Image (cartoon, rainbow, N blue to C red; front, side):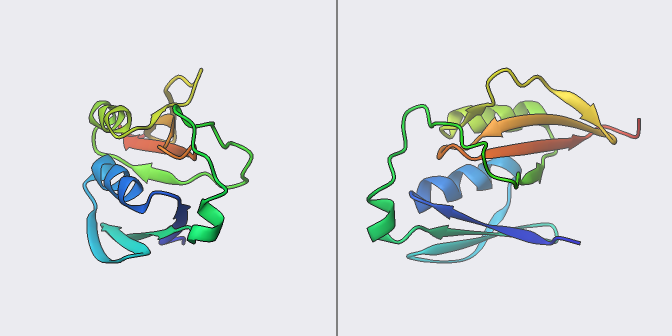
Length: 128
């Protein structure tokens, strides 16, 4: 079973604040170039992209959706409405044209984080 993930970020501080606000995780450990966020039994590491690489990366406002990756993180949230509010207040957005749907006892919503990564939010709502 997957117990966590790693995300590379141009703006470490902004991305840590964004992901902590989504589900109330705790920054367990951090340094100038990484943060370890824990929530339940899951660990999520955000690593700052090295300066010589990040200088070449431009993040638009709103961020360009980067959906061409084969992975999409899933974050369990206790309240979808609160999570969607945290997304928009934190510089992210709902994925354009993505309505909520139900899947295996979860309410699901695709969102885009402040750097354009597509993430899925899952709120448990009971078995279907």
